[in-house]
Image 1 (cartoon, protein in one colour):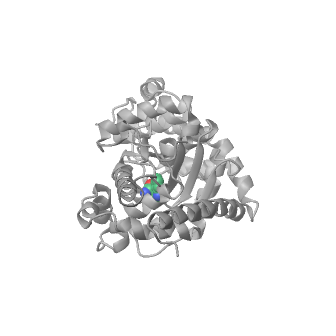
Image 2 (tube, rainbow, N blue to C red):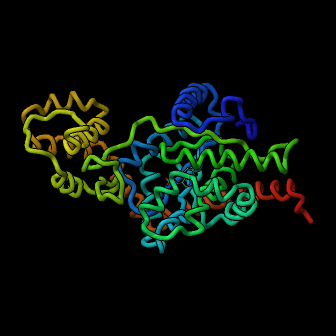
Image 3 (spheres, rainbow, N blue to C red):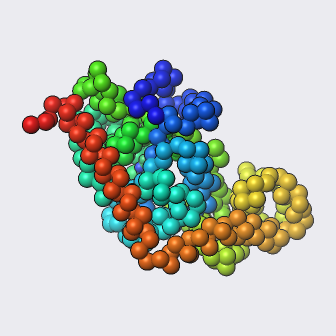
Length: 361
Ligand code: TRP
C-alpha cells in the first residue's frame, strides 16, 4: 500500500455525496490494486452482532480480505465506556464478536483481530493527537452529539474525545481505508485532520500518517424488526448467534399490520417492509418480488418466509460458531495473536511519532 500519499481527490470535502463518489472510485481501484490499501475497521463490544452488522459491514470485510487487502479488525473495548458507566458484560460480548467474525469468514491467519485494551502504544497516540484538535471541533461532531443525547448523561471527557482515540485506532497501523456507515463519516474526517496536522507540524518532509478514506457500506441502513434502524438499543435485532428457534420466536413477535395483502411499502408499512428487506438480504432477492410471491398470505406467511430465509442463510455461520465456541481456548488464542501483531506495529508507529516530535533521548 502507499503508506502516506493522499491523492488530490481526498483532500477536502466531508459531505455524504462526496464520500459516495469517492467510494465508487476506490472500489474500482481496489479490484486492480488491493495492495495499495490497508483496511482498519471495528465494532464496540456492547452486545451481540446482528444482521445489521453483517449486511452493513461484516460481509464486505470478508470480501476485502479475500480480495487480498490487508485487513485489521478492532474490538473497540475502550469505546464501550464512551456513553455508559461500566463495561457491562464485556467478556461475553468480546467473545461473541470474535466468534462471529471468524464464523463469518474473517480469517485470523490473514487478518488481525485485536482489542484496544491490549495495545498500550495505540492508546498513547491519543496524547499527541489531542493536541491537534480544538474543543470547538470536538463539540460540533454530530455523531458525538447524537450519542450524548441518547445517553441521557453528562458529557464525559471520553465521549467528547473518542473520535480522536478512533483516529489512533486507524492511524496506529497506517490504515488508509475505513469501511463504515454514514454515521462514522465525521470521525473519518476528524482522523484526516489529525493525520494532516501531525504531518504538517512534525513530519513535513517525511509524512508519518496517511489521510484515510471512508469506504461507505453498499447496503443502505438495515431496518430492524420494527422498521427503525436495526440497533440493539431499539431491541429490534436478529442476532447472528441466535438459534433457529430463537429466530422464529423473535420474528413471530415482530409487528406487522392487518392488511393480508403483502406489499413493500417502507413508508406506510414499516414492519412488513422491514421483514421483506431482511428476507431479500438473506436470499439475495428483491423485496418487491418477495411481496408478490407472498401475495395474500398475510403476516403469517410472510413471517414463515423470513424465518426460513434467515435460518437458511445463517445455518452454516451458526454451526461454525458453535464449533469454535466449543473450544474453550480458541477466542483467547485468536486475540493473543492479533494483539501481539497490533502491539508490534503500534510500537513501531509510536517510535516514528517520538522521532518526528524530537522525543528521542
Ligand atoms: N465507532 C465505531 C462504531 O461505533 C467502532 C469503531 C471503533 C471503529 N474504532 C473504529 C470503526 C475505527 C472504524 C474504525 O461502529
